Image (cartoon, rainbow, N blue to C red; front, side, top):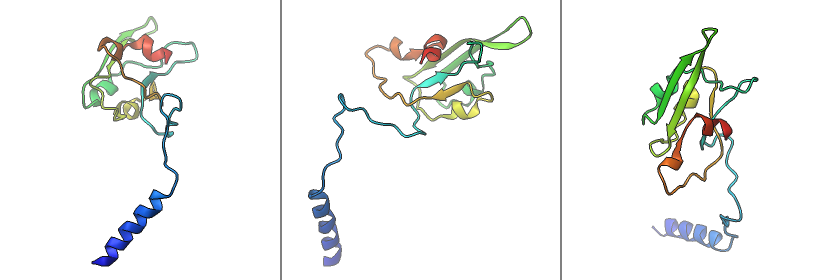
Length: 132
């Protein structure tokens, strides 16, 4: 009964005399891990257009239903994305959309400062996702 108490107190005293691990947030930014799931980003082809082929697999696999994709067909019968919208107020940042994309058109960045005072600021469209 006394042994667990001594073990717990020894751990407490070791942490008490060590240097605290603190980040002064506005001045110092947190360095995210390589597999961190932050803000979404659409990738571009070599010609500068969106890599997305509007297959809508990302919208289908999304558990919260926050992605809306509208596709169109080009002159060479090539599909391209006409509009791509993500509502970050509904997104749970699970990463299923990234895993489901067959062409690797959507990725997740390390950007984590997503707070905003309006709902319109966190509803990203195709142009906003391409510029990130």
